[in-house]
Amino acid sequence: MKPVIELHGVHKSYQLGQHLVRALRGVDLQVQAGELLALTGPSGSGKSTILNLCGLIDQADQGQVVIQGSDIASLSERELTLQRRQTIGFIFQSFNLVPVMTVAENVDYPLFLNGVPEAERKARVAAQLKAVGLEEHAQHRPDALSGGQRQRVAIARALIKRPALVIADEPTASLDSITADQVLDLMRERGQAEGAAFVIASHDERLTRRADRVVHLLDGRLQ
Image 1 (cartoon, helix red, strand yellow):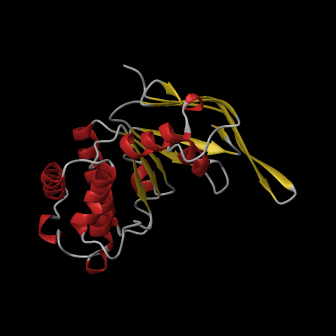
Image 2: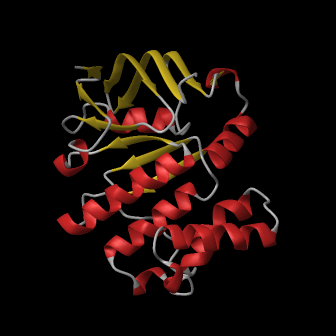
């Protein structure tokens, strides 16, 4: 079975004022379906750059990024947009929920963007909210929820389109220990049920202890 996402000899630099910042220096990485991979390392080590490359938000200067067997350098802007929209889910530390939408509407939004028929959307949203234990909060807005509940909504939204890959940036950093454990359980359970690969940047030892694999970055290189 081919990995969901592959990085081969990837280099990435950014211009910061008069300085050239070498964010990644020859990174090789593969992530399999159902795997929960944690990226660790100090600030500036390259974690966010890897997330951006895996999420097709940015492109490498050198090397290959391959998602589900396709080299992204060969894809047009439209094809990249479709890949992000259809096959990649995102979970953020700050949740990034739309405040004027209900829980159900937030979870439904990726399906709406992908043109899924309304009847199918309603059924999938109801099933997903039940899976994350929020069916009774479907008509609530995010500001009526706790931090842990909002993160559950974010997970439901990320997984609703049945993505091959989920990108997460510090998903447990703002949560207390009990809620963080519940969110980790949920990500692992739903990831395995959906067959999604998770690439998670985190400083949280609660998460790294429970990851399938931990990759440490320092100065743009894997250690």
